Image 1: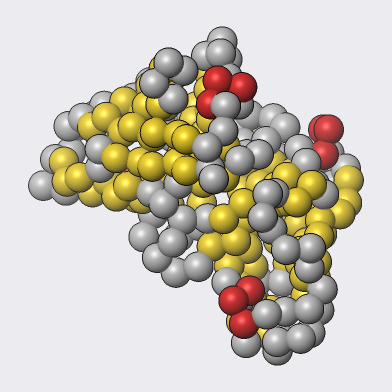
Image 2: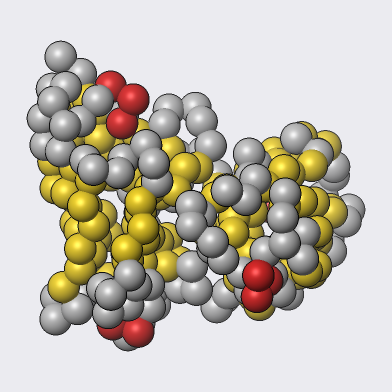
Length: 107
Length: 113
């Protein structure tokens, strides 16, 4: 099983700042089958990035994904107030598909 | 736009059964694999099951293997999750998702006597 470890657990920033979220895999994620999603309280997750770096339809270009192998990063270039939420990475390369524990982005 | 709408959740006693449905629209359903993912109260996301676009490949998490069955009907743009022998630890919001299209809003399953 591929274990995904996200860091930091909580990230405290202000609107306008840059956020860098990390996701490290216990073994290489083949074909870079790694995605990022955002979740706000009481809502379903929102797909942001898939295949490590492809933005989903309708996602603003301030969100970008990068990385390969075992190290992946989600970058939010300039934080907007609506970006404060919990972010999860997940791999869909090998079953059992797994999620990271989440990074809470707070003001 | 992409829509995934789950239904079928509710309150069930331990040992009971439920069938969840997820109706998809806004994309060509039969071309994408589908997942069920759950989230226990106050916890993170847990992957449950996957079915390939044509139903030829299916995977389950160990925690549900032998109790849950995933299926799909591409003519109805719907994926299902049959849940049997339910336990208290299955209590969660259940989401359906396509990795490349998006997520639903979830349906709550509560297993309690």
